[in-house]
Length: 209
Image (cartoon, rainbow, N blue to C red; front, side, top):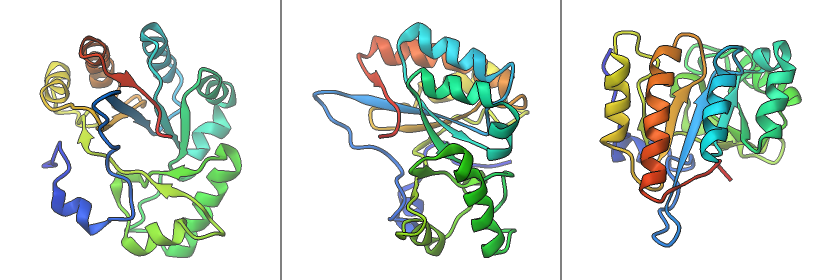
């Protein structure tokens, strides 16, 4: 499996209507940690505990079916001041799903999540879909990322996962982690040093506005 950790400029230019990173403000530098695929019992709670211990806030792109299965955990995410986003109801791949079915799945998740932001599973989307979601009938802003942690990669050593984030992260980055059982061994190894590093640099840890 080969994937770029830092999103190349040419890829960002293919989807200019999507948000790939946040403006870097020298007077108030910040990074934006995001967590996909939850809520997941046994994983999301540990992420929330780590964030709370450092006063960090983040964004959780939730799968609607997981919200339906674990409403109390979803409520905790919101109650503790984190942003939530739509990640479809069934974690569908836009490149493999008929457009009408994909949009219906997003709407099903939206009924549970109630948000203004969306991230496509696998990062698979199209310029037409990004524009469609920004239309008045379905106003969802597509949020992508500038830095991928690689925590989903089961071949990756957990310490290596931490190191490749720490060596690349900078203010304005939107960083992708996954609060899932698959990613947990690497996520839970990488997240604490990333939080410590951001605080040591004086960076804010904020949700996507």
